[in-house]
Image 1 (cartoon, rainbow, N blue to C red):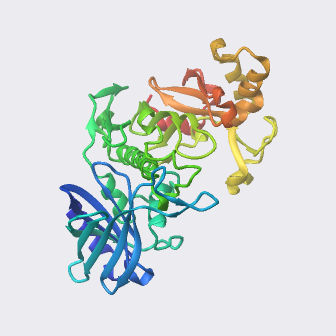
Image 2: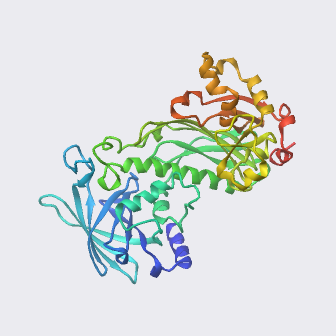
Image 3: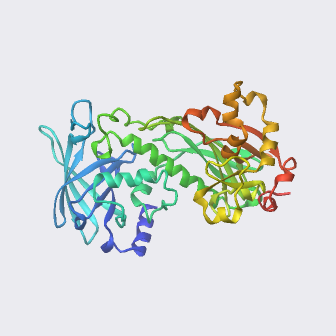
Length: 432
């Protein structure tokens, strides 16, 4: 499959214009993926990863002469082997090995002599074959740090296309066999969970849909989301190197999966038009506090985008950020300036929701309950997803970290119960 994709890439873009090459090879009998910049962008920098482990290792530029390049493979920072500045930043990292690379611009292959740092070490030969290439992004520099940061950014830059043309290194890194669970069923649709053995959390894939509809669209959405989460987990696993941001403050934070291995992902609905799931856990690699979350995702399979709740709920209205629940904005103005407005339930739907919140959801403290479930809180934090039936699950999320305890499912309502609030387009998403 990789060879076929590489040939496809060759038809799309010439390597003469490429600035970053992706290679495949073996090191100590293990498959590796390697990414190297080109000398026209400065001294050649790079990274590599063992496919069975997944964490990047920095290749720091030393020198380049035509198609012969020398790079230092950075070792992990331990407690005593990274030289720190007074600010806590690493100014000298330990050396793991020296890479001497000879690149053939005709065959687009490279031969590497890797010499491990240490007494009596014997040089190792590595043969690298090109899988793909891409331009250096305008915002990127030819450094080991910048190459790795690009992968980490895919976790939250959803507008960046993640495919074999735009990201051959990342796609090769993620191209490993997935473990599969037993099939399950929701409303006539079959699915199962697949797990990258390196990151350890299951994520759903569709097996079949009612009326023999194709699963291609839904699985493209699910696979893309899964890949981005995997890159985030592997980013944290690699954060034991100076080039990836380790310093005296954060050095104990990396080298693990950021607790993605305990992330809970649950598919709640699957049809030819919609897919819904939840993600919950407490993710943490670096920063001030963990990301405690219980998030809902619903995608429109026709558009490939997150479902706009207004397509289901007519009573979904815009407000300026920070506005009171009753301060409804003009719809046309809001759609023309989407970043200035947040959408949520109108006051009638807020009342409907509050009347039906189960008593066991409340905290038992009037002040906390108002912060979590008062009119303004519902206006700001209400979301919907689809569950079996089909029904609409009302849920609240997106609170500040100190109030993440508020995050919860509220209740599920049938389409019949919601008739006064349904948009005309709601019928397009559900069978009779």
